[in-house]
Image 1 (spheres, one colour):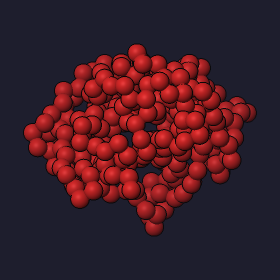
Image 2 (cartoon, rainbow, N blue to C red; image 1 turned 180 degrees about the vertical axis):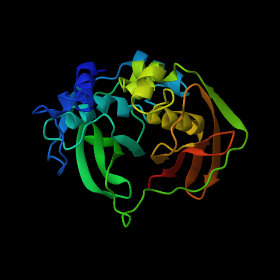
Image 3 (cartoon, one colour; image 1 turned 135 degrees about the vertical axis):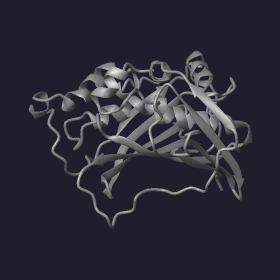
Image 4 (cartoon, rainbow, N blue to C red; image 1 turned 30 degrees about the vertical axis):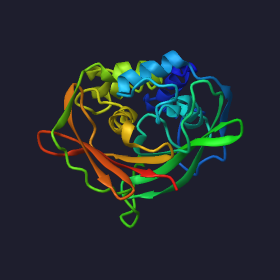
Length: 283
């Protein structure tokens, strides 16, 4: 994994009063830059994949867990969002949806090319949203792609669409107990050290009652629970709803649909949704 901590520090600067007014730090809105970032000949570290699999509930295999390539692109996403041409600060931008298409399983022995670029800035009822597009190739073959959708809160448009909807998948008795250090553990594997995930102190500074789980961990944990029921070529899409406060308990739900599975995470206490998603066959 690349060292993303210097970029994370840069990402935090626009949130610091005074510093956020300096040239090159200030973000004033506007359109998305026409830019892409690429990593060539990216090797896969089998021991790192194993740590990720254990934390997210996947069996250890000779292929990558379906969401794992997101980690290979995370540093590229940060580079784009912390560049001087990017219109919004990275801290405070909310990951609201994610969609991953795996065209075939990726072997641990493959070397990959990872490309990321921003696209499709558009209105939202709560501000503006944009996509971060990621493509992973192996020897020229497109094997994996992702659309991460981010919300920048602000003046919205009530006529704009609010986001994706998914088939219902009510909880059916399965609950997961999530420890208070889950955010720090996932940060150690993923490189995503956003302070809202690390401790009560840093989370409260950004408006949360305590630290919250990473959205991509919650997606991965759901995919891990369904892993043995999913085809090799599959699209998994989710919407992140209410944050999961740590430590805490979540209820997992899933059901078969005509072309795959619907799944959910919710509060076992009152049923409020944390995540809704669906896995569908490709082709």
